[in-house]
Length: 299
Image (spheres, helix red, strand yellow):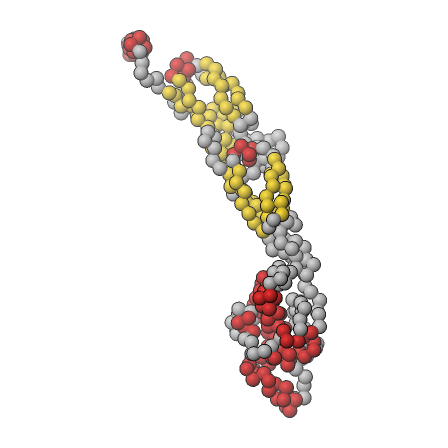
């Protein structure tokens, strides 16, 4: 095989530190590992190149030789034998190996074979890595977020059923452990992260655990007072209107707001703003009476 630029393989600069080499190796090895890319020959080939590059650059002794000789690696054996009488690979030198996944002799560059010889064909202990985390978004309306219920999401062809607690907030993310990608080298599975997008409600505005709504009352009810029925998220309630209620008056219904997340039995409050509807298309009699009332108010 032709000479391989291991720095390009690991997508790093020639001045990369040992830590940067290790980080680049782990990132790429996880990306191209055969367990993550089953039956993908190109990914398997890339994985072997990455592992080979790490065998060389991840070992300070071997990296020094590689940096010194580069394309002239074929002459390393003769040069060192004549000048030092040393072998190419220091077995005691620590190095990191992701895995020697199913290698054959012709899977390696000539430079790698010259450094490691038959050792390259042996299987080293595989490192265990947690699988990739998955993420998805789930849309709910405000009514669905109000009650605890079960939902099913399909991730990579698998149906995952889980419980959504009442009071989930817009933009909130929950984790379902063990439902991500498969682990590498026998490592644990990744996790699934679900972010919730909650639609606005036409009649209620939510602010954390409190709800806000506007209720329209007619002029006569506002002036004289009386009883009305208003809608809440858990049904209708009767409400007394005080005589002389002004437009924009606010009242609070304690405990009629949104459920507190994972605190069963606890709710926020419902705030109602009254909007007074002025009558239109008055009859002649109504106009006469309003005129009399206006005279009484100004006399």
